[in-house]
Image 1 (cartoon, one colour):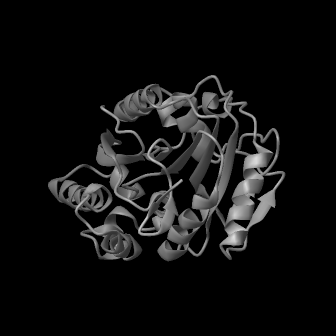
Image 2 (image 1 turned 60 degrees about the vertical axis):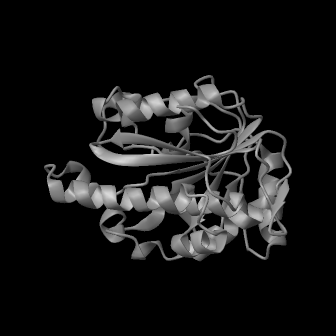
Length: 280
């Protein structure tokens, strides 16, 4: 750990990553609209130090309090519908990591945030789809952390700050969401108005997360009130796919080191990395 303005935060050799994880299992099914996503995730994993364990904050799990998978062998949850049969045959038999789950639970409790361990819950596609692309051997222990169903931005920033207390060697933290998540727009005929809205919000998010001249108090304020951004509610009618980014920023407390763009399902999307700068 290091400190910024007297507060503990992640060291520069740690890795925190917010990813846009695409549409359900499509990145694993050869969908051409996910080609850039597949390229990005495989490139990123090739440039990161291989982690000892991975903590994933998934947009696809909401609970009344932050909840942590604590089982030694969590099953997969095929939490999508209407896809080809092979989408339900995907395997990713990575182990859990109960010791890390316990650390996450304790860090949240120490910060005054009620939290819960779940011995039974499995891994949803917000974890196993991107990690199957990044680490296909499925031999790195994983833990998943839920969102809080309040969907309150400040609450998720606070969860990230609480995770600064983690002391786990070579941990990769992944916020698995999507920087653009309007389902109707994904499948609507493309038009210039949609593109303008998409790009305006993505540019705002890029500036907010990467501009080193923005004071951290201002960066926090922007993320706290993200709905004020250009076309924010068009790009995120519901914010569950954005909030893993808030956890990542709460954890790091500084501008991200790398922005990695990708066009996914015809929309400009982005990924943010905190750690050694990635040259992709």
